[in-house]
Image 1 (cartoon, rainbow, N blue to C red):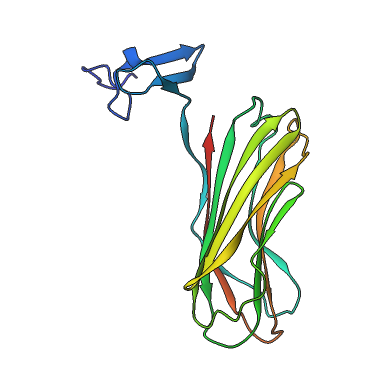
Image 2 (cartoon, helix red, strand yellow; image 1 turned 135 degrees about the vertical axis):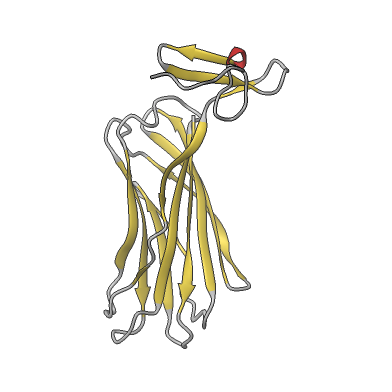
Length: 186
């Protein structure tokens, strides 16, 4: 049954007249009343279930998302990745890595005694089976050095996005990941 929509508005409050449709898919949205437009964007995955590393001195995947095959089918498409959490209040060395396909961004080793942390990046399709990325992070008051990377993940297959963690202690859970957000920009 259709919903009542007397003003013919999208859920964002934008009139349907400012949307270009292709079949049943929205292809572009007008940027205000100017001549520019943008592709639809939004969260494609948000995981807010906290997870702590296991009591082992081995690295382990904390949270992950599988970007479906063919999500990158045109140059310029991108995903924004943000992972965040906390470190235990101790002097153990702790390390984090964001992995996207064949790219890895590392935090380096940090004691981060009781610190919060965030790791984030943007991955762009730069050509057929070619991606470029820019990553950054913060642990407490210390910035993690920015890094650029390239990859050749095949876009007709799924691309795995994950955060891995490693604690220098085999006796406790020193790293908690509180969330992983993936946003898509077409």
